[in-house]
Image (cartoon, rainbow, N blue to C red; front, side, top):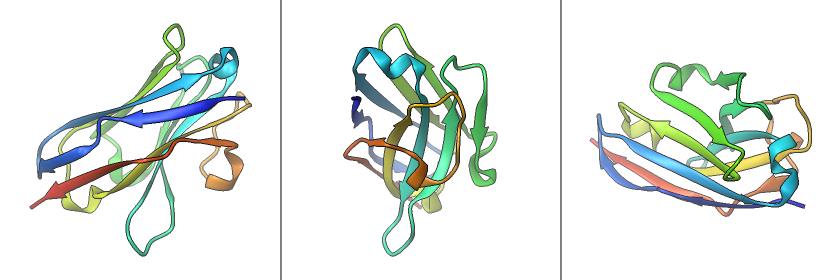
Length: 124
């Protein structure tokens, strides 16, 4: 079992930065792949970024490539999403998720564990 708790969301102006953190419980987190998803009002939850268990493979949706960076620190049971050059269209609730596999997938239903979400609002 893994429990996930996100933090770091907030209100920021366009062009600004935020760093989201995901604190995981459970010794097995270091063997799980991790993803960040987001959900805007009236829209489906979408994949933002993913990272494999060791941290040496990362994946991004096209709209955030070059602006967002996913990382993890298995020694601390932490995952991160550094978000730079934020745009109003990045406004959403952001969730971290984990799946007990070395393979990173991009669909929400493939992830077994979810945090409660943290709100990110980007003003124009």
